[in-house]
Image (cartoon, helix red, strand yellow):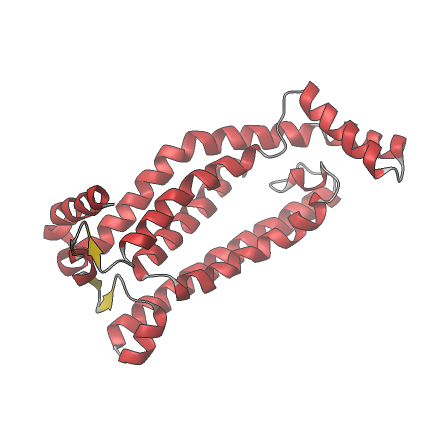
Length: 239
């Protein structure tokens, strides 16, 4: 963790001429964008996998008719179909899972008072008066107007991204009903039981508001940047 702390400090030093006191926050945003850029090839592969799964929908519909209410036989037949076509129903999960280590690293880095036996200098950094190691509750107690604006902007951005995701999901569902190619969520009905998950998934974006409120600001910046990147990336990859 000390190596990562030194990396953030060095990156903040490089950005200081441009962002001054907010250089560390800018370094975290740049770090997040770098992580997402590295994971992007996997996201593109996941998009190809989703299109392949969507192409299997007519055959899966036939399996439903053939097996009727025999859910066990249907489950087995669907899995066999995916295996025969070399399509993984869970391939889209990999890009998200690979980002978790970076998030937890930032969380622990800005939650620790010491690093390698020394005071954590990163906790001295702030964004418009909001400490990168602080939380929303701390801002409410401090009464800092600048810090309050930081969280207001983050909450507004998260809400906007979540609403954007919800509208795209509804448009995809409407296109599916009219027989047009679905924009996203096509795999929701490919495995029994995943349909309910697909319907609920768009609303889960709003839970990011809770995450931003309870984690250190540095981790919140990572979450907001990554969530925004995901929304734009999905719009580009899936249309």
